[in-house]
Image 1 (cartoon, one colour):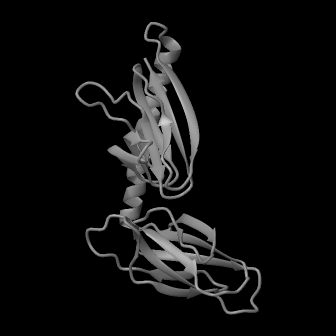
Image 2: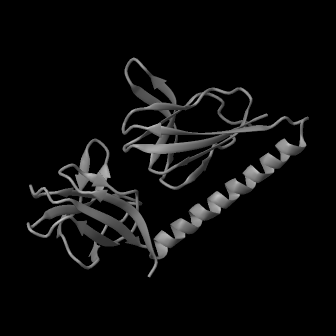
Length: 231
């Protein structure tokens, strides 16, 4: 069976969220420091907008065996996160690994991501080739990884009038914006909502790409990597 790992955490009284998924069948693997006390937690699909919204919560507890659970998601919902938190007061350390069964839709999404990444990597190779060959073109790449703190906007890329291409990768869902008001803390002019594991290529619009500052924000601590090409 094709299983894809989407999260792993030590469970606490605070909500833990996996990466986004569109699956329905999940496999939980448990590790605990002791079996002396009964421990329990809640697990549910979660949608985060103006707060945490959970759907059909399920009670879970420790098992020696891997545990399979299913959730039926309403039509029209493209993706969600699996949320978990503890309900007991025990000091037992409890670690849970979460995997999703890669059925057709999940496999197709993985294929689409791989195809997208291959296209971007091919373009990177072309740009690198042009850079190595063409002093006349003078195309130079720069790559950098930044750490994001949950819900705190950060500048990802400075304005660059000579920007020829920008590629962004992230390990959790991340939103990219063009404007940030430091006084109010408000972000505006959404560039893209980049899904976890996706490779985003800043598109050409009317024969040119956006050359201003790019800000990034995510709901969890994360890493965002970009590669920028200047002509």
